[in-house]
Image 1 (cartoon, rainbow, N blue to C red):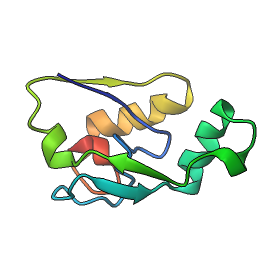
Image 2 (cartoon, rainbow, N blue to C red):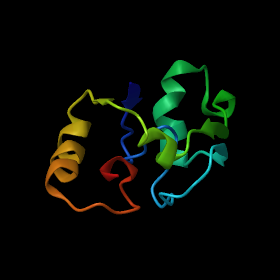
Image 3 (cartoon, rainbow, N blue to C red):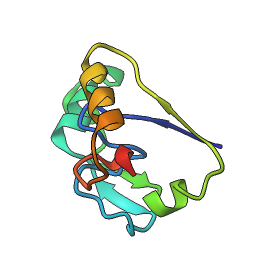
Image 4 (tube, helix red, strand yellow):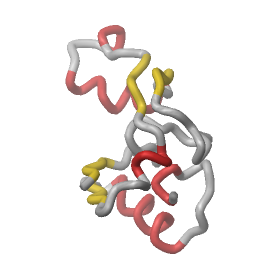
Length: 95
C-alpha cells in the first residue's frame, strides 16, 4: 500500500506538476509553492529545504492499493478536478 498526500499544486510524492510518468526516483527541486506551504513547519522560509527525494510515479503505480489523503478547503477543487479530469502531467495525482 502506498500512502500519499496531494499538494496544493497537485503534486504527489514530491512529483511536481510536469513530471513524466516515466520519471525515476531522484532528488528534485521543490516548487516555491510547495516550499511556502511547508514553511509552517519551520521558523522561516529560508529554513525550508529546496530539494527532496521523489519516488517515481511508475513505482507508485505498482502499488496494489493507493490511499490519497487530502485535507483543507483548498484541496476540494483539486479533488474535483482529479476525479473528473483527464490524466496529464500537470496533475501528477491523475496518473
